[in-house]
Image (cartoon, rainbow over all chains, first blue to last red; front, side, top):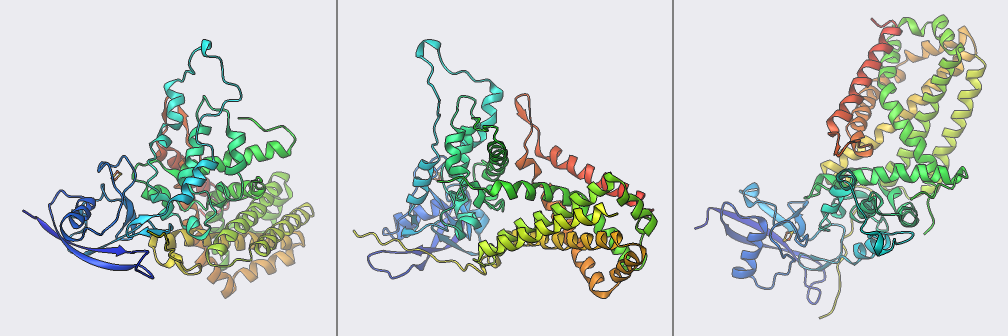
Length: 249
Length: 113
Length: 130
Ligand code: FES
């Protein structure tokens, strides 16, 4: 009982056979309420079992199904097929990342960068257990809550023109995660993180194209985080160079 | 990884971008009228001279000129990189150099008014 | 199974032509050229002003030249675009938290527009345009 037909033009790359990627077209009978991931699953299950791609949750939570759909980085599980009827839809692995195989990208670069920005609570001194938990008001929580919604789907890196031009750029999601901890009232690690985030490869490679925020499926708004970090880093830099210590965390 | 010194110019860029967003369009409109040979009264020599003779007027002109230059120099540096030019150091030196010279000249001319 | 990741290359000189969003951003960046040139034009005017009435008169005269006219017509829409695109993202760089909630961005952007329009009208009025 298929309501609509979708032509999928899927990028294929087999590192053992192919010198370079090629496109393979599949005609998929879809149901009205399907998402693109359903259509790709249909290909895998019924047409071509050699197709490789990542997915897990099918509900925009795990972040593993980010890919280029009709030229835009999207979650395949959040993009409805009804928005693509009557045309051939190109499906490619996330732009700006190397292709491991078919729709699977190599994400090592991001993983290493994420590690560099120390995305965890840093305390100068842990308070003893006897003093109880670190408490936080709802206002303090709201200060960073939006940034915790990131699912590391890396659509933002695929959209970012600066990351495309400057591979060393730490990039939207990793820097946003640093900002998430900087904004946390329990954290004291901003000065440490700025060793990375306020370097050339940190926020200063951002040109505020805002593309990351436009494509983010979770409305994290990485561009906002990065601009705020630029302002904070600038204030910290001036304080430091005016000899006022400035190493506030 | 060493911290970048970009905040020095980025601060000027951000301030300049904001200031020029507020003032440049209306100023261009005013001189556009002058370009049609119909300058508004404020551009008459006596009026503009009186404005620039006042230290607040001097300060306003100085800040607008200087920050316009710093803003443009910094943003064009990024834009030229985006257009494929990779001589970043030369572009930076030229752009910031022009801005610095323009800043000094603006101050020099203004104190003479 | 051997790994042989494939890297797609992009053109470093024409990439922004491939996507409307990137092209729009590139144009936004290039508006700064006109802001900068206008800064130099103002500097030139201040120099003329410092040299006395004749020099200033010559400056006003030079403004009526075809090059100046052409520059103004190109620059005017572009500096307007600079202003609009700059204000439209102010809430991202400077979010304001009041109590628990953040102020909706439209208020921050809107406040910039109100100040901008008010200021521009004051300048036009003081300048004797109306
Ligand atoms: S499958 Fe988990 S985010 Fe799409």
